[in-house]
Image (tube, rainbow, N blue to C red; front, top):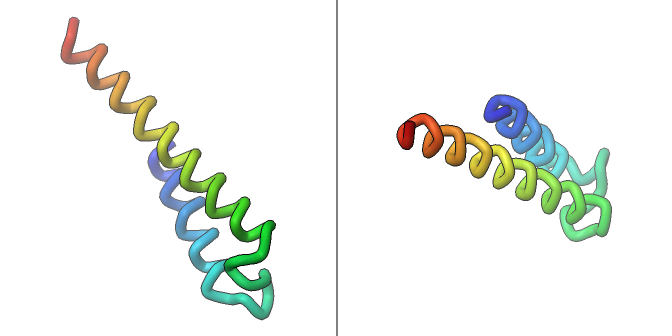
Length: 58
């Protein structure tokens, strides 16, 4: 899940660096991609933080 979040982040960043192909970074579809990758990375961090707390608590 962490690797998937990292690859997703890098993919969206690469798309943001190539506006001729994917559009400018302030367009709604690009803002939606950035928002989605941020949410996904946050969910992955929370998932693993909870797993670590469960492991350390037992």
